Length: 147
Length: 276
Image 1 (cartoon, chains in turn purple, orange):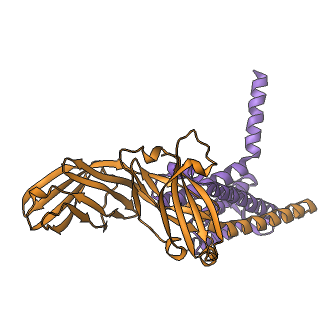
Image 2 (cartoon, helix red, strand yellow):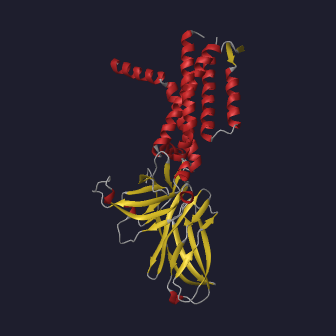
Image 3 (cartoon, each protein chain N blue to C red):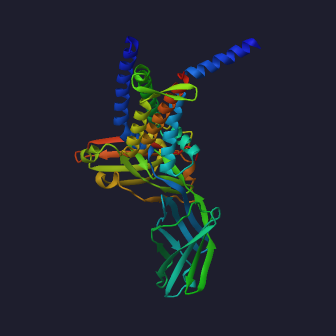
């Protein structure tokens, strides 16, 4: 029983370590399926199927978008971990002290710029989802580092 | 920022630049192979009733429009006199509880037994075709009416990196030939003539790599500038006594040629799209 529990724990640790890869994959999947279901006027599930069944070029491009998402998230992580304390201010809610990171505002502005740009729907959706994911991570860090 | 983070940032940035370049330069190829024809339904309407026959008329939804291809209606000339008649096609979508009528007039000439139906584009909200019928009327008198047979058409997929056969579909005894599209615009200048040979393998047991094992059933030739990247609604009808087209190993041989006899030849398999 104990051995089984340890194996299960190990599986969860692997999933936890791969969480960024999994989320960036889901964002790429969602963006491309959304784009395809808008274009072909099909259901979202059919859009997902079409990514992998349409043509080798479609799913190769999907893989590239996933790698792109993962890389920009890595860059974001390195930069925010290094500079977030420098560009922040503190505030207090009840008994906790929080630090607000300005990177959240920056991501929000970038998201709006992307929405208003003339990018194709696929990249527009993908980048907006990535910015939302980055904002969520910053919010998580805010709660995690509260005093 | 520590040394390790700087190194990670540098590697990630270089990799991102490479991926962004790949995404940028591959986008045209991706779009070419991904964003094809949009069709929610695609059917063939036919009629085979004693002296009345309707040769496969294709009806399909192209975005917000319903399109009906041209066709030939064979009639029993003994029931007609020299006058103006109306052909009414009724289309019923049971799921969405909607029905539509398409009316076309024709002037009957003596001993005429074939009526040419013209291609039409209609702005209907038809999402699925469940029943269709035909009526021939003179003023309010119904001369003839009968249900039409609806045969769903299967889309065909055929492509390599630079070339794709678009809008190609197959039904048991009918094939829409489609048209050749390419991302390589120079090919039209380099090779002014093109020929597309549609063929099928004689039997499944024969070797696919031997060109002698194929039957060429349709050949389309002409100037590259007229045939490449230009929509074409040409169709091929197979005699119903022969084997079904949708059960055959279909392929197309594309031959680009110059005045001096030099040519560029390649072949592409025509396969049913996934899920068909």
